[in-house]
Image (cartoon, rainbow, N blue to C red; front, top):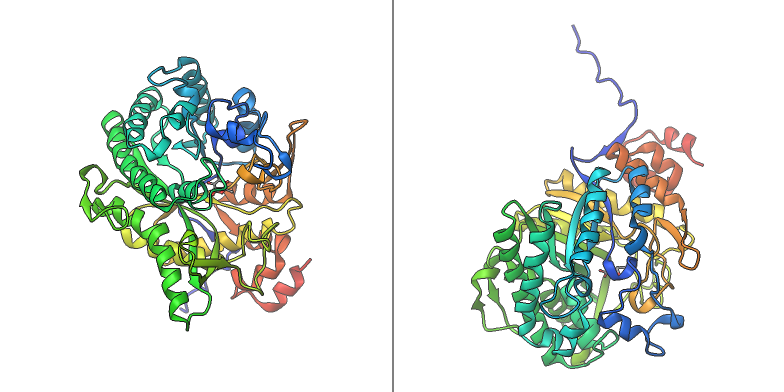
Length: 464
Ligand code: FCB
């Protein structure tokens, strides 16, 4: 007897692996409000520091009412959330730890867990206590020991509520903005100091890795790497290729290989081996927003390369001004494949775009998730995706001028209004899949790319 033909899939969909985590990412300073004891609060007071003279103020009022947003996450079916702790709240003066602040963080972590949302905690997301800053900040190697003491306190106090940790968010962004471009505190343009800070951060990552494991043996510790895929502006031009490679070396290679084999490579060191740094990542977090084309530039402050976007690319809000992104999901696919060579679980710890009217976000979200889906199909071990971000929040130098939220927030009234992409993301999280119907509804132009084998008449029939 001839075999029965395979029954048609009732609802064609791109299905993600069982247990895949779906969530959003935030950072303390950007959402908590009134974080008055760190260097960013001071910086904000300077005229011209932040676009339009904006202030973080109450931010998203998480210190008082994060639970409002946790309820939203729960209603949207999210299974994970990446948040950060504010060091200056936990240790307002050197060596004095504040149990009230820790109690609040315990309540936050507990609140996530009770809603079946798995927390991932970042310990340093760009902000330092003022006392650390006044003692030379991360230029001073003493910061490593200070950081270790804070990490030890935090993991002992919170380790029963969280088992995924990221000591430092995007170390290189912190260094480049603060010491190379000089547009974030401490507003320096000093390459040697930049390298010193970067070296201390990499060492601090290794020390924090060991401290977290010593105090919470089941913990998983990783890093959140800012990945910008640097490509030569003119691939035929030797200087452009070298400039792009130099950026990739500085931005990714130094950190990723250092945290694998424990070596502080040039220009951070002369291959000195740091025992605490060797094999110091249980997972790799990728923060991905865009790719950059790099054209050679003789200025060392630009690290010998000028970044620019492709003239015929598609851009997010402010993208053409070079502030934010070019749509390049294939670059996410490329980087996930490259990072997979380290044989560690991968999380997309940030990905998103500023898009105040949400006219691009649904398509960008689907495009990036499709890139991830393809990488997973090809064997990459990707375990979760954290969209940046849940509600609009205080976007550093750009203040309230860039809107990254799935949910629109009016900081003056604290009113929240989900954008269409919040419902799209919720449907994906709930079903652990991207269905054909979702693509037809939110971004029909992507249908031929995401479902290339679907019959053309079916594609036409479902177009909006
Ligand atoms: C990342 C930062 C995060 C947020 C997004 C838009 O580089 O880690 O705090 O500002 O960009």
